[in-house]
Amino acid sequence: MNIIVLFGGLSPEAEVSASSAKQISEHLEAAGNKVVSLNLIGEYPDYPDFAALYKAKDELTSVHTDKTVEITDQTLNLAKLAEICFLATHGGIGENGQLQALLELNKIKFTGNRFLSTGVAMDKALSKKIDGAR
Image 1 (cartoon, rainbow, N blue to C red):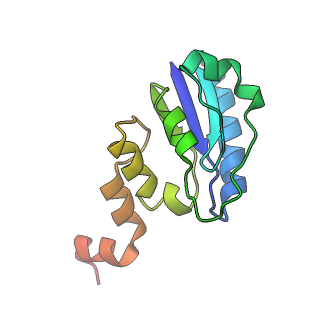
Image 2: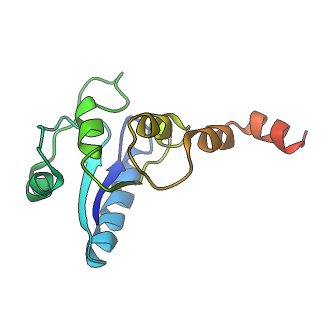
């Protein structure tokens, strides 16, 4: 399977996310998948297909310096090349439902919950109201 592991971003937990992505990628590769890890805020060149991206995966190191961009257009466009994206994000848009919403809007398959359940789960006050707890 052709898989992109998404990690990093602007969250204070970006370093933990990068570590998770490395371990996840190693395990997915060992299971016979082709895996490329992409930082949410990476500035990457365009690739025509997943095979070309996979061939260049060891050269993908640039990170966007604009601290207002949660995910670059380049990362989102490359995510479309995969059969599925594995979310190795921690904090920020990776946990509040925004990343999931962007992926859904772009018809990109991903692991984990959809945007609404992710967003509600991260809003503790709303979660308690829905659950009936006070």
